[in-house]
Image (cartoon, helix red, strand yellow):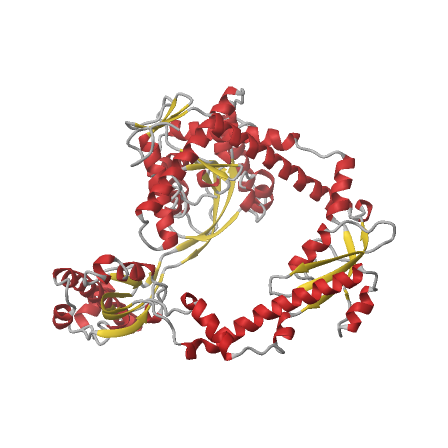
Length: 638
């Protein structure tokens, strides 16, 4: 509970994102008076401005995220599209907040405070910490008033969501009908006409192959490729033969005295008496003095911790906090603990959390390794550091030389002592020894490199491997020779004919059945047999998806007469099925807990649909005016 706020809080996100109907609503920083900071306006929504600084901050955040996803720079077209998406999200955000405000949704100051106290980033040991709150906001440059305004908007929008979700419901009769449909089963028999089986008996002639090749030559092109000359530097190849001398080893050992020595740790127990709604600070101090007196009179520490301590995590363990070193606890607690002797119990110590009665259980002395024990460890660390230094220096020099001599890799290879390597057949999809580097593919197929004959900039393949490259030869797509694609064409023709034959046979089966013949007799006469699976549900995995969908689209049998239908399948096959019976779902056969869960899910879906409709309406009817210079070629108004 008493651990200090560490580095994790410094990375606490500076943007509050509200998810409404699956649409991100970014609430950005406002000034202490509730107005947005920054100059300029990106757009206005129903007369209310969206500041340009707000737009730019969200845009920058989205651009960084998108570039990390694609591992490449956004094209001008993609960046323009992203700008429009960001603006539309901010417009929707503002329209929803305006609706919530105008509809009278309000959150009290106390509700906002209570909500903030529950946020994990501001808690220490499960309790809200004002210093943690102040430190986290300061680290991100967020004024407290701005953050609290954002949280108020968040809670007010949540009120809208909860209100819609809470009002969504199904009557018992409606729910029974939904369950009857959702849990419906259908009993059928079917026959599959497999194109692979049919295709094995199909012969394709040379003339047919040649005719297909002539008509569809564009389908049989080689891929565009380049042959690359490149220079590569890897961390694994640098400075591995470096042997640090004695002076370097001694210096590395002495420069950080704590590196090979563990710090002293102390095992403490504590009883925390807190002030708050239950007691005043004076009452808390009086109770702490009373507990300390009971301990002095011989009372059991664990029993008193379980009874009085306001730290539930340690109270269940008799107040035990385990072993910890300096820097773990807040300062008053730490000063008292490290001034005690084992077995000693402190007087009440006041911190921001309340009054602590501390007992020192044990001391784990510091421990260390001497120079000779860690000699090899030091040598390896120095080799690794030398390798990294050399790697980064060589990479920087390679980048400079490639830019200074854009038409050749020879000067860089000569100065750094590298061998120019070649890789043939590099494509826009990447690959080869370079992995799937999007940066390399983008650079290689850029106009400057592909057509202008320039070197690429330095490309980081991964954290310990970099390269520069140039195009030695560019090979455009060309027709593959017929001999190379003959088997491929033959297989394609067989599959097309097999699919056609499957459909023809399936439709012939349907015609004979419709003419009065028995379906089982028809399939038997063709050497086929009807298959049975038993009644199936809508999400049954035993049938091909196209067949399953057709089965549940078919009308229910009437007057005891089965329904016979046919359907083409994704693999080129064909299925004919006979639907014998439709068995409604029985809500009473579903466990009550499962029915309740299903009903909640359906209500949530209904609420989401209502919220989506509301958001669409708000966005459609909003009066939006966009700054003239926000987009390159957009009109000023929408």
